[in-house]
Image 1 (spheres, rainbow, N blue to C red):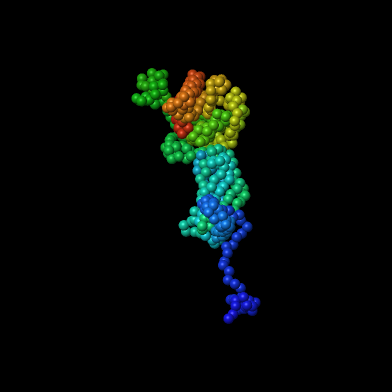
Image 2 (cartoon, helix red, strand yellow):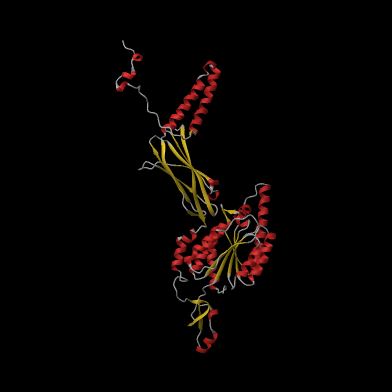
Amino acid sequence: MWKPWSLNWSKAPRHLAKPMRLPLPNLPNLPIVPTERAAWVVACFAPIALLIAAVAPRAWIAAPAAVVALLLVIVLDAGLAGNARNWDIRVPADTEVGQPTALSMLAEFAGGMRSRVEGALEFDPRLGNGGRASFALPKHSQHDYYNGTYNAEPERRGTAQVPRAWLRWTGPLGLGARQANRELDEQVRIWPDLSPVRSKELQTFLRDAQTGLIARRIRGEGTQFEALSEYEPGMDRRRIDWKASARHTKLYARENESERNNQIVFAFDCGQAMCEPVDGMPRIDRAVSAALTASYVALKSGDRVSLFGFDQRPQVMTPFVGDARAFHRLQSAAASLDYTSTEPNFTLALATLTAKLQRRSLIVLFSDFTDPTAAELMIESIGRLVERHLVLFVTIADSELEEFIAEEPTDVAVLARSVTADTLAHQREVVLQRLRRMGVDVIEAPWDQIGYQLIDRYFIIKSSEAIG
């Protein structure tokens, strides 16, 4: 009778030269970490270990053995997940504030079985969500790779860095995971929101409008005399030329050439009040989006546009742009407006603006205030500006105050808050009434209506010949 241990394995046949070994997964130098499922398994076994210690103290060795077995299973499960052959991160170079921005990750693996693949990104808080995001990477239905996307919503303008990314994939049991990380040198330039400019409604309006789309004289508005035409019912009676009518014994009306080449300045208060959020986005960004939309319409109408930003001192003052093809200059200047936490200096800013304007212009001022005391200097500076220019004051309605006022007073604290909000709203209305009595046109509306009301008011002012 032969004995296996008596064999000389060095002289044995080739197929018997080495004992049979099970193939083990390839474990590269990557961190292996337990998953949340593994933690729950340990938590479930903890009461069992306590029960064994209470009932059969001599069987204590079972608990450490179970822990070692679980660790081996975790390592084996992570090894069965396979290796990451290649993974890449795709970040757009440009985006707009408040618009969904896709940050995607793609991963390819060499062999193995995976139950879940996840990605994580670290980025500048300007992109929202506190500067971090994690998302799943589902497997492509037709190709052997995993792809996932996280839609960030930028909250502020500027350049956002994306410095680091993580990739994590778990084994078939979901107990062990492999993890890799990578340093990135990606950045995203966040521009002002131009979605209103690209909207179908505005593009249709500009395509159908006559003003500024074709190079010809347009009669009926403006200050420059063009021709006389016989008066017809429905025409503005102020257009009647009484001297010409007396000579011809018929009523004749003057037709003037429409005003063009008007100067329009969009001025932005970049102080503390304008940097406070309204519906998740700073007021200054809401104002910039509305101003750029109105700027585009004004350029299409043949007028010249400039941007002016200030806080304690002037930040930006662009030359006048008269061609819609140079609209990107206004967009770049608006993107450079900074967020500040200080009170604006209206006296210095508006005096500087007045000194730079050589002719009467329409000045659209975007600002906000918290109390009448802080608004006194603003009112005084605007009063000096009204002497030479036409001023349009634009402010975003405070929806939070309106909610506090309309809230049902269920207790004393809610009642006190409602009374305080009502007082602040009354003080705000007093300041706006003072501006109106000074001859300042005022727009106060919710942020999503500011742009459209501004465009409507621009056409009203333009047709009334009040700028030139």
